[in-house]
Length: 449
Image (cartoon, rainbow, N blue to C red; front, side, top):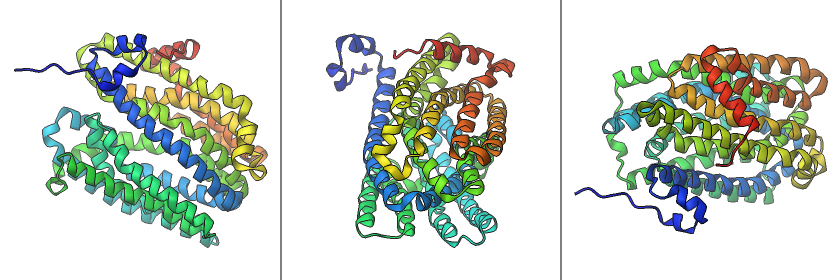
């Protein structure tokens, strides 16, 4: 006897016109619920993280905050390599072959741990070469860099994502986040040195990893059943290396501005710029949460009905454009007030940088969705060359603008390169023109629903 899925309890508390649209659409309800958990987690992190993060920034001051940001950017660039570009491939294969989950998870863990360790040693060596006399920066990078190996435990996260059950990941990682936030407050009150705050960042990831594996075990997973399979490793690496190259150049777009600003300018200018970046990046949880929830269904839609696939994709573009405008327009006018309120006079110069950077969020939203589209179409190489072009534009503009305009120049370079990545490049590559028209439509006619 078969059973019909029932509507979720939370549906009854929504307004009538929304409830009607969702009733009996169980796959969509699942995606909405999953997005709700992810967004709720990000809102919690945004609230608590902003308060504690601002307090940390005020305590450290622009110069030490700049050192911490430089270390995070260097480790972030190394992390793009350590991830091996296999995340989405693993999720896709877990959706398609759930019976082989132990092989995929075990192989993923071994690959990412090994790559993380190699990248950790590499980033320490690079920083020692380019900043040979800056012992403090070397120490901070050495502490923060251990996250490259801890991130290997995210293999369990991929299992939950493949089942659209991100609420369990929220439980696990949320505990680590709250404990680390409390620890940072204790560090401020005890007037701890910079290295202690770097250790707090690492502790958050470690606690989250332990919690994630615990929840995975409770939900029926068995870590001891994970198996490394060389054929699976070859399969993942072969499929992932184009994505890896794309991830590297994509991370260059995201982090190279801070690395170059730290090299060309000074730690204080980087600290001020990093404060603006932190506020601008608060809103990234909206596209990432939504795309993480709808990505499995987008893949399934393409396999069943191409028209429905493009219909869902256009709705995704429309909503993400709406979300981008909803953030960018208010912050454009309130930017100076926000910076002064949060960070104080020491960071006042971050206000114009924030006003420019906040418009980057609009294009980042659309670039994330467009990236999911290219992956669903299996146009991995196109995604790679798109990211290469955006990275080249970003680096070139930073080289020209940072020496003359400092952080403001870096902000302008970022905004232009993100537009190129999300929209402009669509009209240079023929297979992408359809998505370019869809993005243009979303920019001109954004919709909440």
